[in-house]
Amino acid sequence: MKGNNPYLVVIAIQAIYAAMFLLSKAAFDHGMNNFIFVFYRQAIATLFLIPFTFFFERKTAPPLSFLTFCKIFFLSLCGITLSLDIYGIGLIYTSAPLAAATTNCLPVITFLLALLLRIESLKIKTAAGIAKLVGIVACLAGAATLAFYKGPQLKLLSHYHLLDFYLKSQQHQGHAQSSTWIKGCFLLLLSNMCFGLWLVFQAFIIKGYPSKLLLTTLQCFLSSIQALVIALAIERDIEQWKLGWNVRLLAVIYCGIMVTGVTYYLQTWVIEKKGPVFLAMSTPLALIITIFSSAIVFGEIISLGSLLGGLVLIIGLYSVLWGKGREHMPKATQDVEQASG
Image (tube, rainbow, N blue to C red; front, side, top):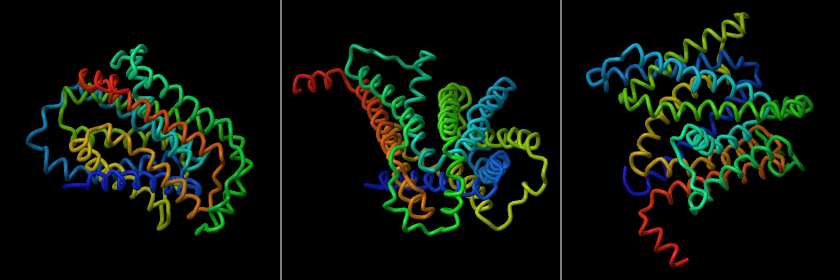
C-alpha cells in the first residue's frame, strides 16, 4: 500500500463502524436481544480469528502464566463484555447517530482516565495543556448537549428513506424514546468509559504479553463465554436465540467478522504507517456517514441538538489531539512556532 492509501483505509474503517451502528440498531429494533447479540458477535469473531492466530503466532507466542490469564479475563470482562452489553442497551434507547457521536468521546475519555491514573500529564501553563483542558470541557459540553437538548428536527433527508417499515416503527416508538433518551446517552458514555479503561490497561498487558493477535483472540474467546453466562441468566426463551435469515443474522456476522476481524488488521496497519493520532482524527467520519445513512436508509429524523452536540464533541476531540501532538513536538519547533506567532 502506497501513496494516499492510508487515507482510503481510514475511510473504509470508519465506514465499517458506521455500518455497525446502523445494523446493530436495526437488529435491536427487530427484536434481537442485546445480550444474545453480544455472545453471537464475540463467538463468531473468535472462530474467525483462531485460524489466523494459529497460522501466524503458534510458534512465536510466549507462554501464558496464570496471573496474565487472570488479567486478560478481567480486562475482557470490563472492556469488551460489559462495554458491549451497556452499549447495546444505550443504542436501543437512543439512535445510531448518537452512538456514533459518543464514540468521538473515546480519545478524550481515555486521556482523562490515563490522567487520573497518572499515566498522562496535564500542564495548564503550556499551550498543549490548555488545548487538552479545552478538549475535555468541550467533550463534557457535547455530551450534555446530546443528552439534554434536542431542538428542532431536521427533516431534509427523511423523505427519501428506503425502509418504510423502519420509519413507521421509529414514529411509533418516538414517545418512549423521549423518556429514555437521557438514560441511553449516559449508558453510551459509560460504555465508552469501560472501553477507555480497556485501552489504558491493555497497554500494560501488551508489555508483558506482546502477541497481539493471540491476545485479541483470547479476549474474544473469554468475552464470548462471559457474554453467554450473562445472556443465559437474563434470557431463557429459546426463540430469542434463533437468528433466521434476516437482519439479525446479518448484523451478528458483520460485527463479528468485519468489525472485530477486518478492522483490527486495518487499524494496526494504519497505526504502523501513520500513527495512532492519524487514526483517531478520522473518528468523526463515522458520525458523518452514520447521520446521512440513517436518514436516507432508515428515514431517521435528526435533531439540531444531535448535530450541535456531535460538532462540540469533534471540537473537543481535535483539541485534545492537537495538544497531544504538540507535546511530542521537539522543543525547538515549538519555539519557532511561538516566535512566528
